Length: 217
Ligand SMILES: Cc1cc2nc3c(=O)[nH]c(=O)nc-3n(C[C@H](O)[C@H](O)[C@H](O)COP(=O)(O)O)c2cc1C
Image (tube, rainbow, N blue to C red; front, side, top):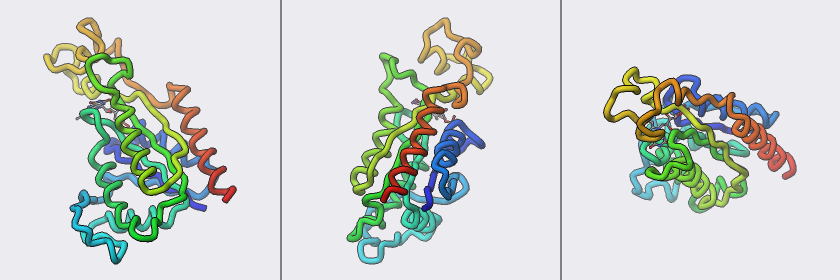
């Protein structure tokens, strides 16, 4: 039994990566962690060249990653939400799983989960609920492929302006945009996965629930 975890976060040892690694570890099964930044994966070009062969015509690492997904018994996809949608590495990876669809449905019946790191607070009145959009993109992929969506983990991550060095005075500061004119780099701080008990519990639960599903089969 093997669980594949794929992270689209480009930051080294990011919140997204650490949450995914905890979920994988919590399965108690054999796992593989993939960092998409280390691979080259172009988006699907919608040519349908994969229909007969179940292999993409684009000769990059997307072929190897689709093979890993095909061989795995479960899949956890982790990403973040630049400009309120799923990050492009994670999205391209999902699109490149399309060859596994026709006409066998190689992913169908497998359990899966989503991990999303976001910065816009869920109660923000101006901006859309980025974490929902990120989770939905992964959940609907899994639904469309006939997978069983087991659950999601949401981590309140880092507003990049907290780290850039100009967060307190920049007229484009996301800190003030999200938390109002009085907010500062130090009042907002850095969102850390390990300091969010709900997210930690959700990651452990996701791993355990996925393991239960595949070992019961
Ligand atoms: C270019 C860019 C745009 C972003 N836009 C949003 C956004 O619209 N909504 C949001 O919730 N987070 C946004 N973020 C914040 C990321 O979700 C946040 O940096 C997250 O913590 C990254 O995950 P990590 O901590 O695992 O690296 C943005 C980040 C970047 C780099």
